Image 1 (spheres, one colour):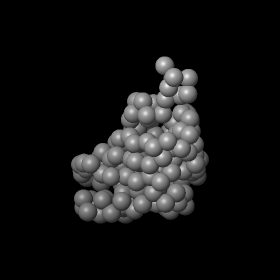
Image 2 (image 1 turned 45 degrees about the horizontal axis):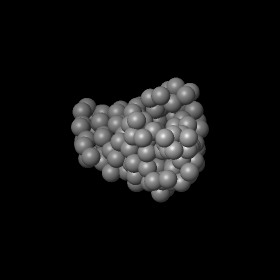
Image 3 (image 1 turned 135 degrees about the horizontal axis):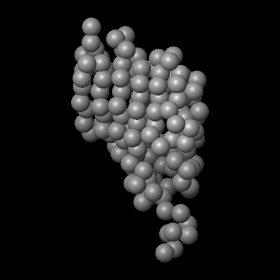
Image 4 (image 1 turned 90 degrees about the vertical axis):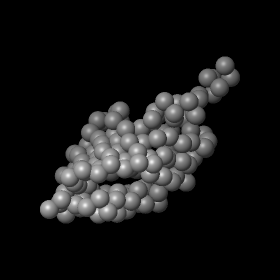
Length: 145
């Protein structure tokens, strides 16, 4: 039986809450053991399985801080949702390979999430507005120009 929109919303909101608290174990608990985790453009490509997704979250939580996600739109289908969100916080590390130097940052995200009938995340596909990140975090030599 397909999940309801409310059930999918609860699961993705739980997932986002774990991310906001830099809780790697919590985030991973929302994923199936054999999850396909695909952050488009991530250097290692799609990860398969919880443990293979772990390094992404460890890196993300070191690179971004004080983050909050605001969902702008959600579209629901049979055991999937598409979420357009806005992330706001600071960049103390090197998000997406760009020196953050603790600067404020905001960018849009598009999540395409597929769920099992039990409600866990079977596939997470994430698209990041990297142009916004680059525009807000110019490199020192670029900032002088």
